[in-house]
Image (cartoon, rainbow over all chains, first blue to last red; front, side, top):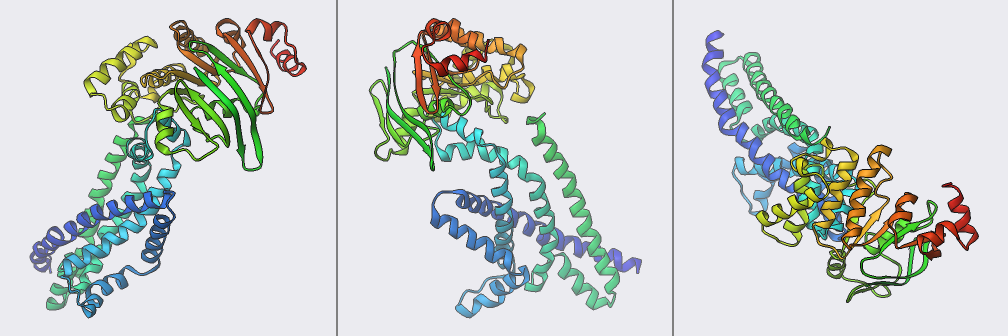
Length: 217
Length: 244
């Protein structure tokens, strides 16, 4: 049993390194961009953009992530759009982070006092400039703890990519377990690797929060 | 230099400014006094278009904003650049140093090169007595120091008129003096200033004209000596009696 744990460690770590971690990081980057765009659209005065953002958030939050992944990977080929497992997963996870992040960032923007907008306007800045230079940097600080949550959830959610055939950490574990008939060992091993990744990330979270708090007493 | 005609501001059903006409000459210090809810702050904010007037016309030099028809964002932004606003709660940008706060407008709005903007921001901070605090963040400064950064930030845009909205109301009593001194120095340099304040001593000592506003109207205006010592209107007398 010790041998199996040892021999399976390398393939599992490869799954984490080549798929789980890149999937998490790329999806989070794209998702965060979507989230900022969606949040800014939602607080804008343009009705069309508001509605668009609202519908996007509602659909993504109101349907299971697994179903979304299945639609993208198994469903889209029916209308001639065939995507590889990895890009399918990236799209699915990015859209998810975008929707959840959108609400976080919107709330953070709204939490910045009105006086900050007024101070920006009073020195002649435009709406966009104020958003970019004054509001978003401050909103970023507010949104770090909830966004870190989203990020850590995402690490774990990437295990769903195993069901659209991405050979990430969990799929690797399933494959080895099926071959060796030792499910308990492999799944616990996978669980431990997820936990270690999340633990390291939460250390980073503390660091970032600490860094951003230097502006407030 | 500044002329305000028929200024009206409603918030929904509520009429806050009911028609104010006012001319202010260049270099004059005008102090607005009045009970809370009288509309004096709203009036000041209309001059910076932080509140969009419902009706009326504001003119600074040759720049006119006429609110009887919709005004463009661009003309509002341009008009704002003529006025500098100092807020009761300072509203400094907490994620920027004192220097960063003062440089922000010149760099992002006026597109002045950073090195030049920095030089001028340093001069302005020195002028308000904060030469040794340029790299401090707002949370590291006292209220009085923050407000002086606020004044420097407004001055950095080289406004034609400075608007002060109760600049000392949020300050501990011992910090009021340092802010008023900066304002007095500005007045001496010939800056045109409109000040909403409860500091009657400042009004008496520095103002060229005191305007008493109540219920959305100008009730009485005149030289400080006249308003404080010989008010004509009953409401002015009543209001001032509170301060004695």
